[in-house]
Image (cartoon, rainbow, N blue to C red; front, top):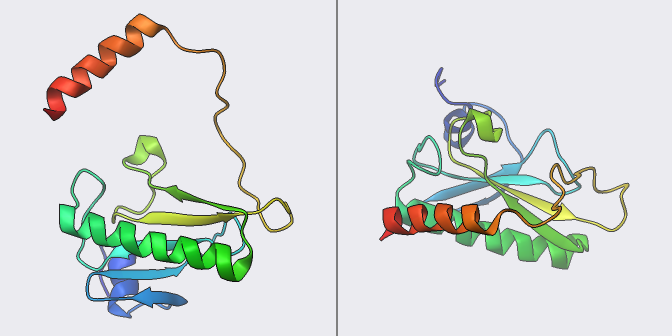
Length: 142
């Protein structure tokens, strides 16, 4: 058993999980603390700490697996929508430091859906500050 990573242990079969999908790069399993009916996680089999660490190919594979599962949640579970959620860093609510995407089916029927929006969009932000931040990010990306 891996003392460092819970999800590596799940992928290795050292800890139990309810597996939903698996391919050579990804592993998807049900979340044991679900925010909604059908909430699950998709992880790369190869360990990556977070969004800043994951190789592009693994990120693409996880995203494509999450998309397939989201479609299944809508078609098979009757979900009215789906959220994909990634938390990168402890201050962004990451609690297991192995990259993962939450696939959270959403329902109009709140008996199936316990997730609430933690942030409510309000009045528009300061346009000058938004433009300045955008410029900084644009320069760093390009």
